[in-house]
Amino acid sequence: MIVQKPMNVFDIAGRAMSAQLVRLNTTASNLANAGSVSATREGAFRALKPVFKTAGGDPGVATVDVSRVVQSGLEPVKRHEPGHPLADANGDVWEAGVDTSAELIDMVESARQYQNNVQVLQTAKTLTLDTLRLGQ
Amino acid sequence: MADDQSLFGIHGAALALRSQRLSILASNIANAATPGYKARDIDFAHALDLANKGRSVGDAADEAVAYRVPVTPSLDGNTVELSTEQTLFAENAVQYRTTLSFLEGRISTIRRALKGE
Image (cartoon, rainbow over the protein chains, first blue to last red):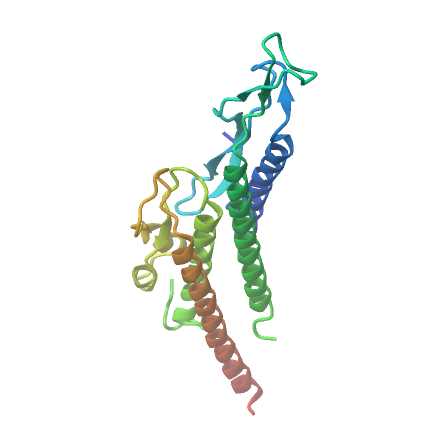
């Protein structure tokens, strides 16, 4: 196991921000692919979700990392559209398994949490600079 | 090791504990979306008491860490409530600054005494 140096506020908030950014990126790709169709159930796009995991074991102090990105369990939707160029023998196409409203909510939530971490970083920065100026 | 004979008295230990608490509250805010994460906090009065009794600041902070009891537990096992955490974070930042101004006062007193003004 790698020996880690003690985490400071900048590590904590910085890594949390990158984790939220990964989440925002997956949301963007899910929304971009919502409504895309495929000829097969297997070939259809499925929503991607990051898995957040607490990192660091110091008593109390911990940050968050994205341990992996998984495909969500939401199944692609079969749609009958015989005129579609990708339609199979039955005239069906498979629409990407993306829940647009859930993705939008996810987007708002991760944006808010990103902002919270920026706020934490700003406060910590001001306090550190104030401490540096102590006695001057 | 907040010795009353030392230059900064209790405020030195208080500043270190405030800084430690800032990190813990930042951890809670960072883990607001992590399933299963349990929010933690330092019992500041207890930690300061321990530091006053001669324990090192790090030890005192470690011993005074406790889990927060959530108002409404969530389904994914996460006990971070952002409203609580953000309020406490802001409060702690103000208290940190208060301690800083106490230290500032102490330093200017000593400086004035040294200059003999």
